[in-house]
Length: 234
Image 1 (cartoon, rainbow, N blue to C red):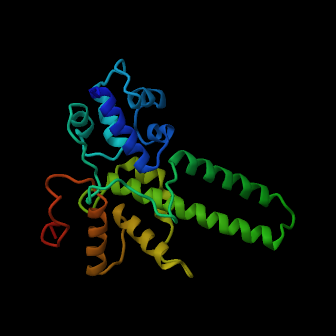
Image 2: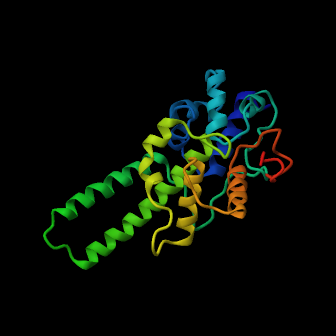
Image 3: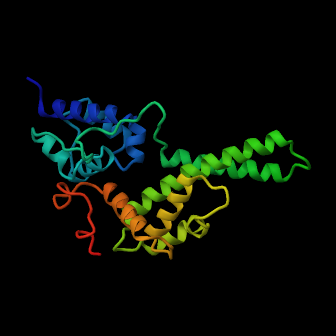
């Protein structure tokens, strides 16, 4: 007969695999240490399951709060995804941990400084760096939007420190000549999340509210119905 610890370890390992995460990435996403996670997944009966550890598992494995505790007691965890499915990445998508993104930004800044020291960098070098900078900027924007969606909303502004840290992104004009339409939409959405002054029509306002709602963790109060103008307090 499978022990409760072994069953729980199998559930955790299966969820981690479904999310495409290694143990270090689970830790980076707010979970327990990689050594602690290894003990849990192996079904080690000596791995003490404190409430804080279970809460960390809920966070990192994208489960509804209380799921890890329920699974340890013989129940089943509930994913945050509205469809009840584990987050899966298609062939054209990949998760970028914040630590890797930070390293990429730092490397790009270093490369930029090196290029400034060159007397006459070739057009190919300048073009390649421009493409790299655009990709890094896009990845950073996506991550910043995620942070603001988690910590702000249409009816509550972001914490002052968040606004201060990412002021560079917020101060960039959303309407840039030749900007990609998706990039323009996202920058406008970010400024709206940050409660910056934006000139948008009612349809865009509703679209932004729906987008924000769709990215919120499932709660009993919003599982059954999406955002509507009546439920949004407008």
